[in-house]
Image 1 (cartoon, helix red, strand yellow):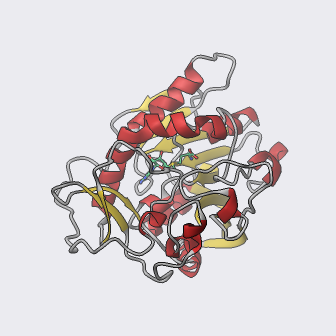
Image 2: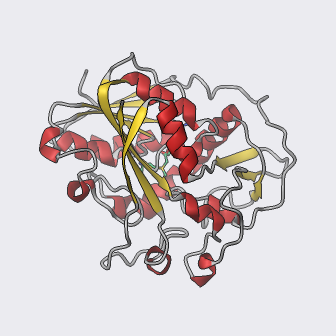
Image 3: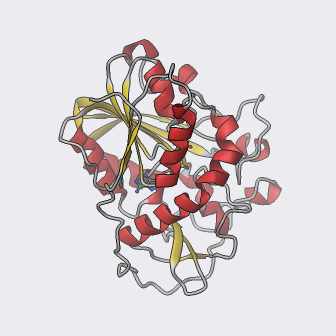
Length: 318
Ligand SMILES: C[S@@+](CC[C@H](N)C(=O)[O-])C[C@H]1O[C@@H](n2cnc3c(N)ncnc32)[C@H](O)[C@@H]1O
């Protein structure tokens, strides 16, 4: 695989011009958890869509991809500005708790990453891929958002001493790779919570992995969907049903979806993974460490010490 920085343009198979795919559910009132569902790493305060209204209502697959691509393009600058320092240019951080792959070893021993073909799904500015490359792996960083990948170029571009790797602009729901291209796939809060059809992402990851390949990804702990998304004590109150899978949607004044996140219970995730042919090896719920005093959206030391905020699924292709 060619080892240089490049954005492969025009690979947006599912996100061009599909404006018709509104799933049409009547906007519900904002679910009790409200912004709790707007989890991810995004953090929400002061983003470029400040006027958007948050609701819980259905959102279709293409509608979701299209909206999230736009949201991340509009908000990538702020996201990297707010969180880039914590993420580090070349670290692999699994979530706001700060669990670092260098210590966690969820991908396997770091010395065994050398020479592996690795796909990072929903890579953002490719900080994790940069760490993987430094371990001697051959990462490919894929993201839906052009602007996020431009940040990957910005971070990597100025330093010719750093190893390069491909950046691919595409939807995780239709990976533009041949079957059996990778030994390992990973995602730190990447595409999985941002798609309406995660079983399709899991099937795609299974397809592009080689037999026995590992798939490790993190997302907001499903429990958080039942709590208010506030870093303070109000974020410890159950306001919505954990079992309510209605998506969290932000819509503009015309009712158009400008952002969507999709909730599944822990059991749902296990069934989706097994259905795609994976064996679940571990489910890691990072505890909040003493050193971490940052508040990131609804993540905070106060809540982090009491309830899990992130779930990391460690799987192998059965
Ligand atoms: C919370 S960020 C995580 C990025 C990076 N891993 C990090 O920790 O900063 C989520 C990323 O997922 C990407 N994303 C969302 N939906 C996607 C999809 N359907 N396919 C590929 N990437 C997607 C977004 O563009 C965004 O860069």
